[in-house]
Structures are given as structure tokens and as C-alpha cells.
Image 1 (cartoon, rainbow, N blue to C red):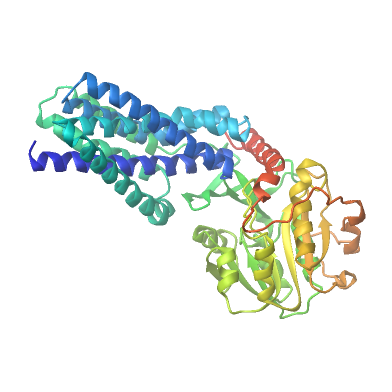
Image 2: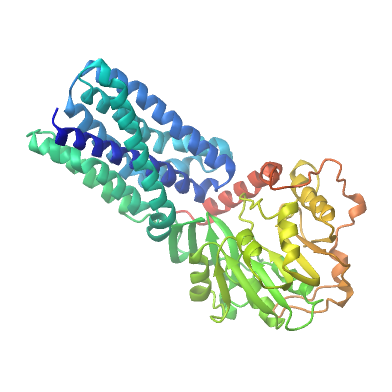
Length: 517
């Protein structure tokens, strides 16, 4: 075998390794709007990636033995893998619309089996076939296998960095899937053309047809819903949609929503220049924060659509915001009329807390995203880091989900126990409503705060009675089974599993009921 011929096979191996990682990353992100981005979703994606490759290695080994020295076999396997990768954005929508009401784990696994495992299986066939083509005598088998797997892995490393740090954040998921699939198939197609293979035209037609299907926008909203913005990136799928407030307000008035992975993160009225939240629970934050004087310095971790920023500005506080996804910052300015002078830092919240030299009177944790819990923030070490950037008498405010009792409330009880262990006086403000629809706001300080001074009322919202009336009586909260959360033993995601499933399932049902045609 000539050197150029060997190098060509190594190039195909490199492309296959890159395509594997593109497939895995895109597959996991495609799941996000339907099943979220929790540890369970990523575990399913990783397990089925390995499962697809395992099947491919086994089948590829059998085929390479049956069709010894067949380059056409390699080319067709690569073309089929590329075709299935190109189709992923299209096939994923079909299967996930059918599995959306399954459990998080069941729906994720069933969906991945349909749209991600098949292309990975064909990619797994590639390495055994290439090794067979390269191996002319037994003594070279080990060296050839080592070279092929090393080059394939190098391709995977390269594409992982490109996809994670640049391509997906800037170009979303559909076009990278199409380009990755075409990139995997184009050289084998050229090779078949040069070999005058008559079936190549059919393969080309199928590839172009698949690209067209995947690239065609899918309208998943009924006529009452106007999509103003949509993209894929770090957090997953982000949309800005004007739609009625069904099941939220009695009059179902129009609101503008920031929707991340099918979960409403911000919902403001279109009739008030997007200044005020339609959700009543959001208005308890500024009232609690009003125990601090004007010009207090506030660090907001997690931006959403900027509702909290506007509330804090109405209190005449000086606000810094940390947001990990630049798209969220952009849409807050563009679609939610957030003050463009607001200082927004694009960074991970914990990283900013550990590296800033600023001091704050209030630090607000508003980083929770449906079933995804940023557990690295809510730990003993995380609270110790936060203490270092707080002025004397400062306060931490944590937005959390409404469950406090039973197994579903174990995560909230663990947050309370961890705050107490970290030396904070802690109150829990429960906004009105049942556990499934309310929010908990943890109010933690090294000194006891006098919340009788909290007299601020948000405009456009009914007056709040004495704030302490909404505090949960902690003598009835049993912390015996709660955990102290730490960096070395992150448990919050596990503790919140049952509650997370209920939240995500309810949002999926709402999404399917009102959004989809």
C-alpha cells in the first residue's frame, strides 16, 4: 500500500473520530428542549454513545473479515453514517415529540436509541474496516490499530474543543450536524465517483435531501405564539416568544417569555413595556431586598430576561450581573428592555465569585434552570467563597423551587442545613401557592435581618402584607435526613431528582398543550 493511500485512510479515521464527538455533543443538546440538561440526560447520552460504538466495532470487525480489502465497504459505511448524522435534527424532533411525556430517563434513552445510536453504530464500524485495509501481515496489526485509534481520538479531541467552545455557541445545532455529516461523507463520495460507482448519484441525492429536511425550520407554535428569537448554545435552546398567559393569569393576557429548553425563565407583560413580571412570585424579591438602603451594591448570579435587574434598579441599587450565556444578555437588552448601562459579566458564577475583588451587600443566586441544578454554587465551599465578597451585614438570597416536605423537599432542606452549617441566620420565604407552583427564597445573613423594615411594593403588583407572614416556620422542618453539601461530595442534583422530574414534566405538558401545532 502506498504512503498516500495510507494517509488517505488516516484522514478518514480522523474525520470519523471528529464526527463521533460532534454526534454525541449535538445529540445531548438536541435532548435539552424536551428532557433538559441534567446529569441523567448526559449519562444517557454517554452510555448510548459507547453502546453505539460497541455495536459498530463488533459489526465492523465481522464485515471486514467477510469483505477483506474492500474499500467500497468503508466508503458506504462512512456515507451512511454521514447521512444519519445529517438527519439527526429532523429525526430527533419526530421521536422526541412522541416521547415527550415519558419520564426524563426513559424519554431520553428512547429518543437517543432512535436518532443518535444508529449514526454512532456506523461510525464505530469504520476503525475495524480501516485497520483491516491497512494490515497486510500479522506483525503490523498492533501498530496499525494503535495508529488508527490514536488518529481517530485526535479527531475527536479537536472537534470537541471546536464544538464546545465555538461552533455550537455560535451556530447552534442544525447546521453543525449537517456540515459534520456532509464532511464525513464527501470524501467517500468523491472516491466512489472516481471509481465510477453507479450508485453514488443515489447516495448524493439522499444526502442533499436529508440536509434539506434537517435545515427546514419546524414551526412548533400555534397561531397565538409569535417567535421573536430562537437559537442553540451553551444552555441549550433559547427562545423569546410572545404568547398568552394560559394557566398563569385569569385573563390569559399577552406576555413575553424567555424560554430555555421549553421552560419559561422570564415572563413579563407586553402591555407595560416589558417592565413587570406576570408571575407574582417574582415580586417578593425586591420587597425582601428593600431592608437594605439605596445605593447598596448587589451581585446577581443569573440574568434571565432581566426582571430582577429592573426591580433592583427601582430600589436604586448598584447592580452587577454574572451570566454564563451571552445570548441571554443579548436578548435581555434587545427584547426585554433592560437598561443598556447594566454591567453584565459573561462568566461562570462560581468562577466570578472566586476571582472578583469587589464587595457586595447582597448576593442573589438565581441560576436554577428547571431540572438542572448548579450544585457547585450551593456548597459549604461555595458559601465560604461568597462570604469573602460580602460586606459586613450582607445577605445572600437564593431562588429555589417550592418543595420543602417529603422526598421532593430533601434538596431544599439540604440547602437550609448547609446555610446553617456555614454560619448563616436563614429565613425561608415561600411565595403563595402549592409546593408545585410556588418558589422558595432563602434569605441568609451572618447577622439577623429585620424584615419588618421591608415596606417596598413593586408597582403593578398587589401590596404584600407583612413579609414575615410568608416565612416558613422552621420548627416544623425536619433536617435529620438533609445533607450538608460540599464540593467533594456534590449531592444536590441527586437530591432534587424527584422534584426535577415533576417540574420538567409539567413544563413539557404545558409546552405540548399550548405551543405545538
